[in-house]
Amino acid sequence: MRRVTYSMSISLDGYIVGPDGGFDWTAPSEELFRFATDEVREAGVHLLGRRLYETMLYWETVDQNPALDFSTLEFAEIWKQLPKVVFSTTLSTVRGNARLASGRLAEEIERLRAEPGDGNIAIGGATLAAGAAALGLIDEYRVRVCPVLVGGGVPFFPRHERRVDLELVETRTFASHVVYLRYRVVRQPAGPPSPR
Image (cartoon, rainbow, N blue to C red; front, side, top):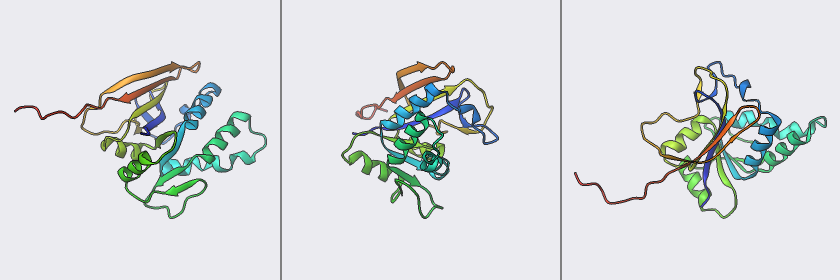
């Protein structure tokens, strides 16, 4: 079954954007950019909220600039070919290899998990990921922790009142001092109800 992964760069205090809406502190080094490209390469489909979709539209036309380096062009090519599902109540059309979600988040993920094919179901955007997390649909959290404290903003981790146990399955430190952590959600087997 295809896994649902949530991956983004975050500040050490857990935010994907700061209180001013900025995220310039997430600009990747060449090494980190290659790593992110490989991560996108292993996705089979990417689920996005409207804001992230609009931010990522940049990659639909960036390859028309002949002055760009190979790694930028490579990422653009991979991103453009990757199927995307956009969740939005305000958009009526989307561009590129994308479609608007036809069902609710749980329905779309269930349908995508059941489809044959390779690659993870990547999810992007804090609001969309929070919805998936609240439904218990995320299988892996992948964070690139940047060495900065921003003091507030949009949190990476959803704020819901339930415990989620995680297992660390991979870690890596980059020359830029960014630390990558990959955690798998530990699923508890269903057992008999506890006696009262």
